[in-house]
Length: 433
Ligand SMILES: Cc1ncc(COP(=O)(O)O)c(C=O)c1O
Image 1: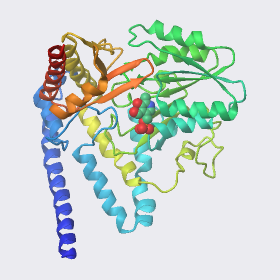
Image 2 (image 1 turned 90 degrees about the horizontal axis):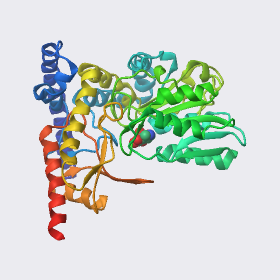
Image 3 (image 1 turned 180 degrees about the vertical axis):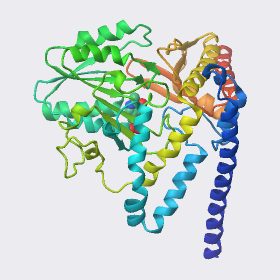
Image 4 (image 1 turned 120 degrees about the horizontal axis):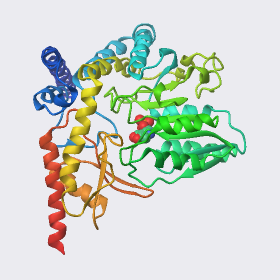
């Protein structure tokens, strides 16, 4: 009995995998034809062409039981990425030490090159990590700072980074100078003033969150970094949400360090990330997990984190290919189109307030809304229990609301349902009064 159940389970899993493999190769054939057909169309025209995005949607396995509008947390990966990851896992599992360390890991340098192309930087400045937290904690913990040195950061930065700095404050007696941003902001100068007012002669480091995850606010990092550089301040950029969401090159931001997660907007396997360190800063940055070259200027010294899922790392390649197939200009235009699609409609409902600018310089895929006199968790529950729409409740410092994050596979019909759900919530509130 036990063995027949086990056989059944094994056959079902094998069946599911082969269906997704088949689906993936059929999809890849059609995808090539679609890309050829659309090659001369402008990104904006493609952004609004549902036929193109229909093919992108087909690359994702979704469920009728949930409409996932929290892609900001982590993204699902499309079929070609899933397929490459699963194939590598199967290969590794035959003889993991040999397969992972001798064969599969050979893909590391080509992937470093491809990531560098996406970032517009040198491959000698790219380390492959597991996420933004690891990338930036590595920088926060690895910088030489002494008692009395000052660091400027905002209360709207990500908690993991804030906690790392608080630990250094306690351990090394550095001083943290906090900025409390009032969002949304639609003027670069306001940001620049916030930061320049916080800098002192003792400031050694500033942390800039390229896109603030709570509301989707884009910060003018290059302008703030320019002011920091004039004062000899090192610049750490938290790019968790921006890499592969919209077009920019990492060096043009003017920072010294940039960390991101590849399982967000690149749709690479879970637990994949990247750290960029400007070449001249590599030598002086201490790695969190030292290898024998811990004081060298070799970027690979940041990758000695021991045995891990190298198959996930190597499947980053398929994610880059998928991303390049869509193209960053089309992806950026589509994500902004989807965000504006629901946000403009929702903002016309009485009582609904947006905490995200719709100006293209200050937001892209993410946006936050609230409803007058309503608790965010009640709105989130309503959307989930009645419409199976999954969003995230945000209550952080001076920010309160529901964050909505579509991705390239999101359908307009799903956003229509979201707006209907918001309207419906407002109607029930009005009826209760
Ligand atoms: C701004 C920001 N920084 C860092 C992180 C941490 O990312 P991860 O959990 O992939 O390390 C997140 C996650 O959402 C984020 O939004």
